[in-house]
Length: 401
Image 1 (cartoon, rainbow, N blue to C red):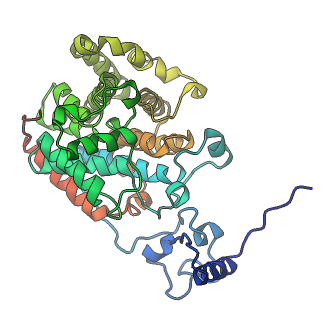
Image 2: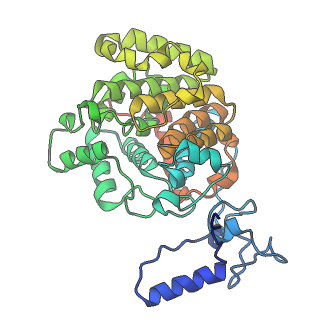
């Protein structure tokens, strides 16, 4: 007979933790959303202003899923956005929230996600991080935004990478809990004083999605400054950690597509324009890589069967998954949740897909309960606001190499 797994009551779980601490056993603790909620009742873990007469749901008590009644004690108000602002706040925050949704279930399989579909914000899981935690995807995107905000040079971006990796800057809790191998190797090269143009990996094995995940801000530079050719900028920014032609071309494809969406084009028009740009501007330097992106460049990715979508960290797999998601689902929420439920590299794919979904559907398409859960949301909001004014004022150095 199959033995049923016993559910441990919350009180018993706490008692177990106490006994473990008494025995000097390290225990991973979990903090519910309740600590940041307006409805909390101090000294009463089982009840709140919403659940007065009944106990809170177990998924709330055990910090497994977001509470539908959550109201942040430090609500971030973002109102009266113009269309331009909606695309910018929607893109950057949409990226961050996709990352946040994917962190708890990163590396889970698609089969696991079919059994336990993610329909809401979760916590802990893979890295045992609390609600609202974002990963290296957002951290390194913030590194780029900050560098642009202060007068962009490649050296400033490299310095930000060093602060991120070794000081915990641009992270939710001032420490790094997730960083890719190629990225870490490149940052070590920067630390060692290597020429910046030579820091990024150029081997076949360096074609992860570690540069693709952080280039979205460049699309706004092109859109708001009317700068048509983003190729050189994107290549330089990618090469700092990922210098292989395939990784660079993936970044160019994504940035140009996002740029076309920011201009207000519909999905297919944006895709047509991006494909034409790649064929016109990238053929000379990247022709040998075109075959790897065939499904995107011939647009067959749109009708691809889900079984053929690979949600791995390989840059081509990631980019194909992003385009498939964007063209097969019709809202910000459905795109990022499906990205997470593909399994695999959930945070990065949901972030990259969430970025373009946030641009296309706008900031208001993003559920406010997710926005309010973002760790360091005020700091990120302030950084995005400065970024908006910087790109609007055409303040961008062309000294990028």
